[in-house]
Every structure is written in structure tokens, then in C-alpha cells.
Amino acid sequence: MGLNRLRGSLRAVIVFSLFVVLLMAGYTGYKAFGQSVDDAQTDWAVIGSILPRTDDLTMPSVFEIISGIFAEPRGINEAFGSIVVREAAFTLREAAVGFAVGVIVGLSIAIVLSSSRLLERALVPHVIASQTIPLIAIAPIVVIWGRKNLDFLPWEWHDWMSVSLIATYLTFFPVAINGLRGLHSPSAEALELMDSYAARRGQTLWRLRLPASLPYLFSAFKIAATASVVGAIVGEISAGVTGGLGRRILLEAQRYTTGPERLYVAVLFAAALGIFVFLTISLVEYSLVRRKGTEAVL
Amino acid sequence: MTPQPAPAVEIRGVTKVFNPAGANEVLALDNIDLDVAAGDFVTLIGPSGCGKSTLLRLVAALVESTEGNVLVNGKTADQARLDRDYSMVFQRAGLFDWRNVSRNIELPLELMGWKAADRHRRSAEMLELVKLNEFADHHPSELSGGMAQRVAIARAMSFRPGLLLMDEPFGALDEMTREHMQNELLRIWAETETTVIFVTHSISEAVFLSTTVVVMSPRPGRIAAVVDNELDTRDDSARDTPQFFANVSAVRKVLRAGEPR
Image 1 (cartoon, chains in turn orange, green):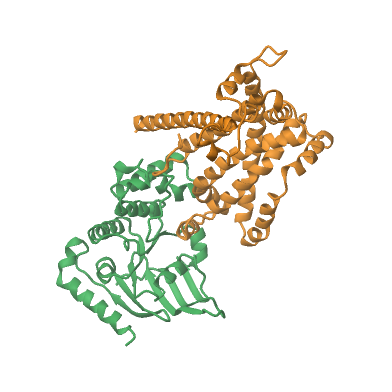
Image 2 (cartoon, rainbow over the protein chains, first blue to last red):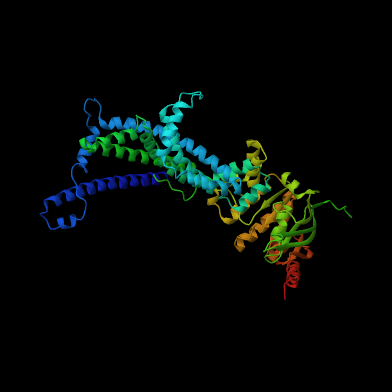
């Protein structure tokens, strides 16, 4: 069983790597194709004439992007990749705190709403409406609030905590909605069984509703973890917080013409961060939800 | 003559209306009177829609009666529920698949606040009772239907309730497993001296298991007859006796009489 799982994971890693190679080949191929249209000397260039053309500025070569990771920016004695990794760690901290707070808030909402049909019907529309407010509208409010009005807290408030709160705004939602479904998922017989044992509400919640919710919650956690990275990046950009990936992406976007490969590197690292948090949740799920028919992603 | 013990369950003039005054109002039970003496094995039998499951849920206080009283051990049904005077077994075993067999059996004990050591000792005893000792650490998905139902019975008996309420517990099992489970249940009933109320729609099951067969008729749910079911032997061999066949015929006759012509 253990060996089989290892073999399965190994296979997944191989297919994943093959896909990365395939992506790089497709990227390089299209780049060459789009550039050759300019020469207009081949017959197949006619097909190319209806597709966007390419050049070194919009599509730096794979080689340039990879060397961009190891190149040291002017005046700095550190590889660009290592700077971005440090910034990714900064963003990861924001995202992780945002995720944790989002899980607590989302679960609390789910538990409160599941306790009464009236509350659920009256408040779920508000929860859904909350997601239509764009993050860039909330971000400055949260940051200024953090700087001015949170001095009663026993710890010092930093701007990155405001970014975490912005990420929370994205993460609580899937947890609340899926959690609500999960809490309602036990069968009528299972609930009658708990009633027949004169179980208190809290006991039914802890011993039946919550464990039955775990599969639902973990799908939500995976969505929320990825969303927390997006929330942290967007939050950094719209709140003007320095030190993380969001700031880096904004900066490299502004000076794109002088170094396009740097923006590509920053975005690739952001994607890697998203995959990392997703896999972390999958591993926790696999070790916690032992149930037949449940397979981990890796 | 031995003195009559106080009844374990007294049902007096119980009527149950679903959706009262609504468009789909249903008179599920009409003026039911029934006594169940301590130590009896009573089956409720009748066609679907005769309210036998509803009657069982009234005793369990999972459903409230519209009129009349249900007393369990001399208390209201709901007080008996709060005092954990009874335990219930459903058609589906309803084991929690995130708990192994032992922890499923210990569920009611956890709810009652038992210490871990006491819980483990009791669940081991219960596994002995249903003969599943080797399966303590298995998960419900690894059990057959009959084994899962035995675990459900062990869970129900774990805190030794005086009254066991069973709602078609063997209804989803194949015939072979079913007969085996019936034998096991009779053995457990004899060993534990528990009062049992058992809902079924199988005549042979009712006759094989019970001391009293309560025949019900549908629309509205009423008690058509209460048949004393005397059998000289109460084990597997009883299935082939003339007495068993005679009692099956008697119950069938009463059931047929209640059918609409």
C-alpha cells in the first residue's frame, strides 16, 4: 500500500515535469512561429498572419527567463530568484495568516447559520453579496484602519497584517458556503440516532456534523488556500505594502520594457506558491480524512 | 400466579396527525392503546403506511403525539429519552465511517461522559457479545451489511438500556444473513433480559422472534390484533416446528383480514 502510493506520487511528479517541458516547448515554438511571420517567406506564414505576432519583448525566450532567475540585478549582490523567494515567503506569511483567520471566520459563520433555517435564509445572501465588493475598494480602508485605529491591541499592528485581513475576505467565503453544506450533510437517521442518545447540540456538532463536514471543508480549504495567495498579492498591490510578491509584480510591470523576463519570473514564483499551498492542504487532508475512496492529489 | 410487573411501555389513546390542518393532513395513528411488559419481545407488523415506524418513534420521543400519552418506565417518553432508558437500531446501521468499530460502539458512552478506560472495557465486552472481537480496529467500510448491523446492535446495547427499539433492522439484509442475525438477536435478548420493540413487515421474522405480535392496519394506523405468540423452543430449530407454521398462519390471517377488499 505504502509502496503503491509512493509509485503513484512518483508518476504524478513525472507527468507534472513532462507537462512543464511541454509548456516550455509550446511557448518556444509559438514564439518562433510568431516571429517568422514577419519574414513572410513561407507558405504557412499565411496562417500565422491571423494570429498575434511575437517578439522578444512580449515573449522573452525560455533561456532568458531561466537566466533571469540567476542574474543579479544592477547594484545588488544577490540573484534575482533568491530575492523573489524571500518576497514569496513574505507573501506566504500574509496568505497563511489570512487563510487561518478565514477558516475560523468561515467555520463560525457556517456553524451559526446551520443552527437555524431562518438565519441561513436571511444571511446567506449577505455572505454572497460580500464577494461582489472588489478587493481594491476594501484594501485602502483596511490599511488605514490598521495604521490609525488599532492601537488598543496588545501587539504592534503591521501593514502585512492588513494584507492578511484582505486575504481573509476571499478565504472565509468558500469555507462558510461549503461548511454549511457539510454541516447539513448527515442523514436524518444519523441525527435521530444522536437525538435518541439525548446528545446535546454541541455534542452533535462535534461528534457528527463536523466530522461529516471534513470532505466538504477540505475542498473549501484548497480553494481558500489558493485564493489567500491571490488575496495577499492583490492586497499588497492595492494597499501599497512593500516586501512581498505583489509589490514585486507591480514594480516589474512598471519597468517591463527594460527587463521583461523579471516579470515572468515573478509571476512563475507566484504560481509556484499557489501550487505549494494547494499541495500542503492535500497532504493534511490525506493524513486526516482516512476514508475508503479518498485519494490524495500527491 | 406471579405478580404482574409494571409495564415497560404504556401507550394510551395515542393519535398522531402529520401536517395538521394542512392540505396533506394525514392521520397516521388513530387511538392506539398498547402495553409492553418488561422482558417482552414485541413486534409491530403491518403493511407500509400502517404507522408502525411512527409508533416506534413516539416511544423514542423522536416524534410527538398529537393526542394521548406514551409512558416509558412510568415516565414521559421524552424524560425516558433524556434518562437514556432506551436505545434505537435503524434499518441502516448508520455507523460513523470516520470511527473504527470500537469507537462506534463507544459513541453513546462518550456522550454520557464515561472515562476512556471504562469505555474500552465495555466496547470489548460488547464485541464479545456480537462475536466481532477481531474487528475492533476495522473501519465500517470494511464490514459486510450483517457485521455492520451487529456493530449497530453492540452500540445500542453498550450502556445496557432496559429497552431496545428496532426499526426494521434486518430489512436490508439477504435471507441467509437475516436468519443468522435473528438467531443472534434472540441469544442477546435472552442473555441481557432486555425489553424489545421490533418493527418488521416479515411475518416469519415476527413469529420467530417475538413473544407478542402486534398486527397493525393502514389508513388510519390502528391495532388490528394482538397475538400471543407461544413457541416451545426459542432457537433456530423452532423454524421447522408445526407450532411455528401454525402461528405464521394465524398472523397471516389477521393481516389479510385488515386488508381493504
